[in-house]
Image (cartoon, rainbow over all chains, first blue to last red; front, side, top):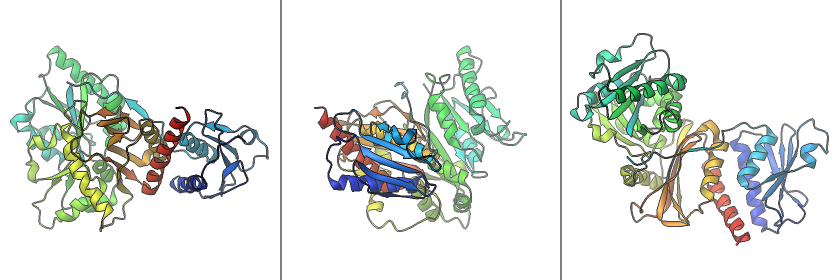
Length: 117
Length: 342
């Protein structure tokens, strides 16, 4: 995680703004802040859950790592110590929803288009 | 493949009147009709002239709540009886829902049920809206908004009744579902050709609906970019997205996944024509109902000189700014990953 590729600051700002928008979309009261490296976004829900987002290094097949501590969890718990690796922004959003206990939609289901008559 | 049309609309909006009139048209001669009435005593069969064998009445509850047990089995049974020759060789099916039905589960069944695949294909959704009471109904009843939101064709009924503000209703309908073609039909008088063969879910290369659909939605894009004017307090609405830059192929499934997973039940329908970077001459047409999508269909060519990606999302509490950021960020992420591995 510490070998994260350098990214333009505006990318990071864009991500934080997007995560804040995502909280609003899910009706979660919370805020998104900058934090000490390697964390690029710290999500704090009013419920007490904290999620830390890091960029994955270029030497990994992942894009993001997410760690979290739910309200009432002791520091250093499983999800805080063992980050969730996410292959894309879609995965990062899924991790965030899991951490925050947000239940939204089902995974996409693609069905075959009808054959031409 | 037998095309199946879903005829829906709120209570009293004129579904049965429309269907009865349509069934008198010679063009509808080989049509099987499935009617779902909510009450225990069905009346619609007395109102719709069609052959006894090709008319199925489902009176044991709301169709959308009993899709698997009722509709799927009924359609499968009709197909079997057609093959046996015990029903006339129908070439089309019209399903009239009850006035309170949510069409989405019905569409899901038609798109996904294995028992139906290979024999039926979803043609489109026709929704009736009462010109006199339509706005009030749309304001007060979520079922009505959902019925309009998933429509391919909207029939505005009772336009001949004094006091009907058809222009205001059309604004409402365009706000909820800019992609649906709205037509007036007094006493059900409307040509079948206007309502059927939508092509919305058609995998044939012709895609008769695409050009017309794009023409209708282009109005909403211009409205969005300019002074859109009217606003509504309802929670259902549509988002029209226009994008100049092509999307990378990998971005598309990621985008559809993100929309389905993050909007959940709030997202009713997605339609779009997408300029895919890797396929500049053949755009992809996407259709989805909630989280269920047909595999993208690749048109043989662009239907017009306009090669921009255009998508319409219809649902509740949709955040346009979030969707726009999502698209930009996903495509940038895919571009970055591609660059890393080449």
